[in-house]
Amino acid sequence: QVQLVESGGGLVQPGGSLRLSCSASRNIFGINAMGWYRQAPGKERELVAFINSTDTKTADSVKGRFTISRGSAKNTVYLQMNRLKPEDTAIYYCAMDRLPFITRALSIWGQGTQVTVSS
Image 1: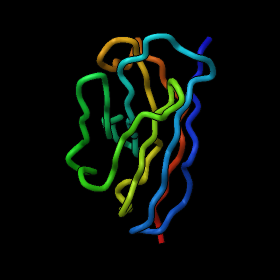
Image 2: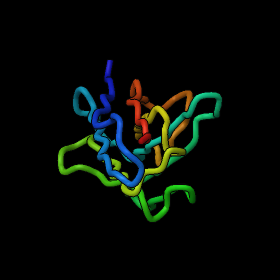
Image 3: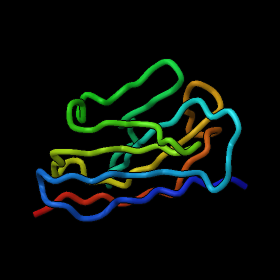
C-alpha cells in the first residue's frame, strides 16, 4: 500500500519560515492533483494549497506567504511557508490523487506533520 510521508514540520517563531516535503513511498503512476491541508485543534481540516496539471490554488489566509510546488522527483510536493503566524499552527497533511482534484475519502493522504508557530 502506498504511503505519503510528510517532513519538515516543527517549532518556529512568528515571522520565521519552514519548508514541508511530501513524498510517496513508491512511484504512483499518473498522479495529477497534489495538495496541502491543515487542521488546527477544534477546527475543520482546510485547504492550504493545491496544484494539478492546469491549476494552482492557495487559500486567502496564506496567499503571498505560502507556495506549493512539485518536486523534480516524481510524486513529491513541497510547501514553502514564509512569514509564519501563530494562527498557522496546525497539523499539516499532504494528499495526492490521479484525478485532478482531492477528496477526503478517496485520495491518498499522509499522516501529517505538526507545525507550531510560537515565541
